[in-house]
Image (cartoon, rainbow, N blue to C red; front, top):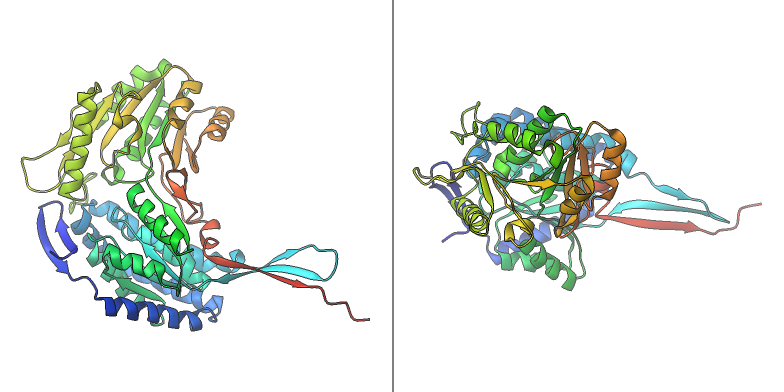
Length: 461
């Protein structure tokens, strides 16, 4: 059976299949990307910027079409899919407008002569992308690196081949030079071969821990730099003085946006004892009104999960937590009365460190709520996981918010909002959530040659 398929999660039907590339085609793709790099690295920043602006314009022009493809491939509600596409345009424009500043050389003060650090591209990069944000994840890797002068080979998720082709079509329509962006449908073995090819200089993966381990192993053996954005079990801390209604609304959007299928979703709600009962009452009341519906309907807030396999796996995780002693506050779970990957939102509590659900990532609409004695206890719970991607803090005390933020072992903290990202703010984590950063000013620095130019020539008389 072919690996790349469009399996509509709303219906369970296979709508399209795509063949994996031949080894000869993969070899040619690497050659094309390497050949294109020789010319692309010499193209001016103004010309690169113009290309990125054309790409952004095409995303907006084709927003409805692109969003519809996403919805059919992985079930994202159409309104959210349109929002994702618009965000992608923002990312391309951000780097088009700011790269000249980010890539400017740094002057170093020295005792004699002069010294500076030039920021130069490194060559061909290999990106391995996930299905949950099939345009956004690609853009945050591609936009800064094309702007920096690198060229791209892109392996998209096997369940998003139509989106992968659509992105390649946008690049062609924008008149991107041949070879600077290359879409490939490859097997895992072929991906390993790409990583080991001497013409490929770096690898970026967004995906699971298991995928990260496999790619990091191959990249390490090949002595290639790798950026990894992996799983998360982000804490959402609610302090005693929090605006309860705002905190509940942020918890709803932070946990259930994209049907909970986000690495930086608010997966663990940690509420201090003083307001726990009030928060639970309001939060569960809102969750009970949420029902998965037709993702093609503009009013739908939650569609199916990305695949039947994903829904089945989440159901097993939920059942394991309940069997281990978790208390059900909102009874959701797998909906098998209709075809597709339907899953109703669930809320559980009384999860302790003896349970798998305490430390593993639940990638879908299941919220775990913890009661904390106080803020110190909340922080202890928050840090007691192997992940360290993001965190959210809900409090009206700015000094308290800053104190909590400093004590959390994560790469990103948001205060009085849900999780989420912006084009101009760096994204990434620590611990088993990976390493490296994307977006913001740091996102363009990961795959650069920071070249020292040191001149000790004596000054002319």
